[in-house]
Length: 243
Ligand code: V4E
Image (tube, rainbow, N blue to C red; front, side):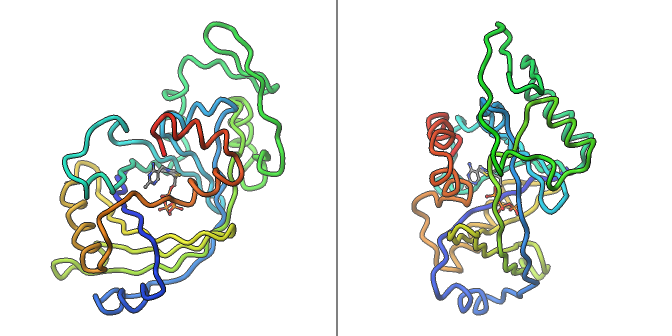
């Protein structure tokens, strides 16, 4: 398991030149579709858990520290840190823990511990779980009332940067989502037990080299997707200080 430390930034038209100037190497371009899953009451995302299927591969991002914890610097506040889980049994175990106490039924109603029924949201095109998953995962999702709440495709251009002479320590991705939003991210992967603060410093140094301002938090693809497609879900995540 690894921790992904990343900072998003606004892409300006000069970004390719700037990346070249600081020695970044283009390592490829790819296009992928993501489907994100949650319960009708947003049990996962309101805990900052992000379950997705990217081109058939499952991934769960879990918070490393609660959102309420204070950051020691402004630059640190701009970096997000998530544990990445990529094996299905581990994902299922982590979600079972996160949803403990929720008794979900596949028939469309989801009961609280106190037995109150909560109406499931209507399933639409995004509501289908079966498109990218194998049957056993589709059954597992259905049993927990987890449906797809966001589906979008990203065209990604990736760059690698050397730090202290070691290539590939820092990665920069330039993403263009199919709903018309572009965002960049500087990313460092930290192995289990590794130094997260050092990763944040590497990201800060890269941001400085690219001349990025250390101002406001930049919206990710999910922020913009939900604002446009599911404002109710977005408002709940904002109110809970998840986004
Ligand atoms: C963690 C999270 C989400 C899941 C994926 O987010 P992101 O890293 O933005 O997507 P992407 O496509 O770049 O994935 P990658 O290829 O890097 O794995 S969606 C919303 N969040 C929460 C979140 C947050 N609170 N703050 C920031 C800056 N980012 C994400």
